[in-house]
Image (cartoon, rainbow, N blue to C red; front, side):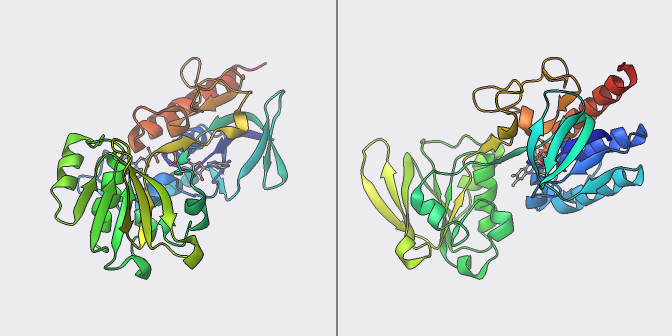
Length: 308
Ligand SMILES: Cc1cc2nc3c(=O)[nH]c(=O)nc-3n(C[C@H](O)[C@H](O)[C@H](O)COP(=O)(O)OP(=O)(O)OC[C@H]3O[C@@H](n4cnc5c(N)ncnc54)[C@H](O)[C@@H]3O)c2cc1C
């Protein structure tokens, strides 16, 4: 029986692990398919306090894990497939095996939203990707025109990153102005290799018949005019979906699936706490996720101290 099981090994999960480990609770961290979480997909993190020169996303997460492990946290590669929170002990199914726990901290983050096109699905990993940091340097994208879809900070970051590899980056956005922060939008639009395509949506990724990306079919949402833009890669950066499907109907969540804690990080189920981007659609930062992980850990510790 675990004192504390933690779903997720991003900033929220590993900070919760650090705090509960220092409280001698020997937490079990279940990594999911992305050990270290979303931050491992970025190069330099410049806004995490304590690193005046910035720190690599992967390095930051590796250090966080090491710090938690130093105090007794156990980090296990595994994905939670089901959760029975109806009674104590709470039971998770992790890669087919049951794990019993007295408390659970859900820090499962959020995943990339897809365009929802059949052609996108067919060409995923064949030129359609959701992470420039992970895939941008692949030979198929070198010196080729590339399309980035989206208008927020992530889309801008993806487009800027890709300027190292592609010949031109078309930034396709459904509105006529970027949603990104002012500094990011200015930096993006000032880049000579980035060309915005406003008021447009991707209706088809070409060409599934050739089993590779050759272009995108675009529709102007104001004029309905259709055009085709040739490209070798499509980088989709249109937001995130919280990884909370396991808890639908069990834990309180908003209409987009973000968990809604009742008081602090406590949920409507005793012993179950939440932290990080799975419960935060507003701030979505490493430091806020870490702060929420700390809060959830303290609440779990208090719950264990005061239970019957
Ligand atoms: C490209 C990019 C750049 C960014 N740059 C910055 C930056 O510079 N500064 C900043 O502050 N923020 C940045 N962010 C945001 C930051 O990465 C997130 O806010 C932060 O990672 C959220 O942490 P989290 O722990 O809540 O979730 P995540 O980091 O998303 O971690 C979620 C974890 O849950 C696991 N998981 C999911 N489902 C399951 C399951 N069923 N079973 C087990 N485990 C599961 C995943 O494998 C993962 O380990 C960036 C994000 C992106 C995408």
